[in-house]
Image (tube, rainbow, N blue to C red; front, side, top):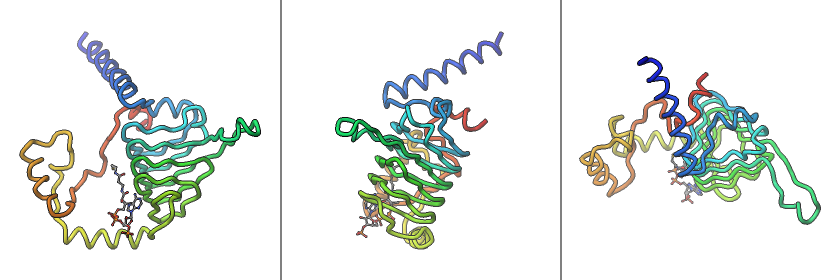
Length: 210
Ligand SMILES: CC(C)(COP(=O)(O)OP(=O)(O)OC[C@H]1O[C@@H](n2cnc3c(N)ncnc32)[C@H](O)[C@@H]1OP(=O)(O)O)[C@@H](O)C(=O)NCCC(=O)NCCS
């Protein structure tokens, strides 16, 4: 009896999550996209309000260890010519392994983002981005190789204040820790150690962990 009750509770929790994320952010669960043909690798993390062209998501492929920040939109179709020429364009979007896509980025159809890439927040990706690079802007352009960028970041880790993992989950931070962080951020930004995996959006988690 207890087993059945906990099973029912777990199902309810999962669906409640899906409904809340849909109402608040318009999020469809990752499992929805996967059922419609989108390919998603291991360790996929998406933040809230991310959209993957629901009708054409079968044209989207995402590699392993990919993080998609909030409000990102990935488009695999374009109806700009519908009124003029009566046609639409379709194009694949392929995202490699170890890729971070910054918040509010738009990725247009027919784009390949290589492995080990960071796309800066607010970018519009209109053309392929080569592997091992950092690209930002509208349209997104490569501004650094990944090696060069990480070299610079490693130097900053020494000169900037670093907080441990107990500061990593903003949702559960005590008021005291928030005050400490606010004080520390007065001069410059600070770094926070992160756990290797942070599950931003539990919706659809089961599907890609299978
Ligand atoms: C791309 C990014 C990783 C670079 O970080 P950074 O090393 O701290 O970069 P800096 O702030 O030193 O900027 C370097 C240069 O790139 C420019 N730049 C940085 N991010 C940019 C962006 N998103 N769009 C356009 N230009 C950008 C800066 O203006 C600066 O230009 P300058 O050299 O002419 O002054 C970061 O800016 C970013 O966009 N991160 C994503 C944040 C995000 O999406 N968060 C959501 C929750 S995870």
